[in-house]
Length: 216
Image (cartoon, rainbow, N blue to C red):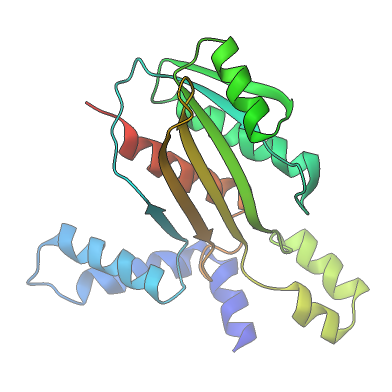
């Protein structure tokens, strides 16, 4: 079974055939509907990357809203490097959808970040919390190195799907009012294991979240 999965992962043609099978599985249905249903089935079955976003509220904000993106690695098991990386991804995705965005230079507590946002005259504070950052061997080079240097039990422990879970707290800077709390959870799929890193998974999930905040 493991060898079959590796073959599917290795050859893009296998993934293309999977999509073609889905398309022809219901020739009488609308093609767009078949593709949509097929992608959803692939995500549910763990074959394709899956992104889940849970929000406490459903605010939308005008595009001229301004944001301060904090760096939060205080007390985190993942350290400053991952904390900065998460904030850079959030800053990048917010910048695509809103006009004014600023990122902190260093890790800050929530209260300190609120003060920074106020001092810079920005409307909203984006404060991330990192709960899961699972980065397993995901390229053939990494997998090859693992096979050469590890025991069979170590390989079983190391090999798996990449997964990331980040909570985003969105606050109004001037009042400290919590506008929204969003939990973004993303996991790679068996057919995209080679292609998906925690970074790319988070880019997609964060992009979807801030897209939902945008008022047109």
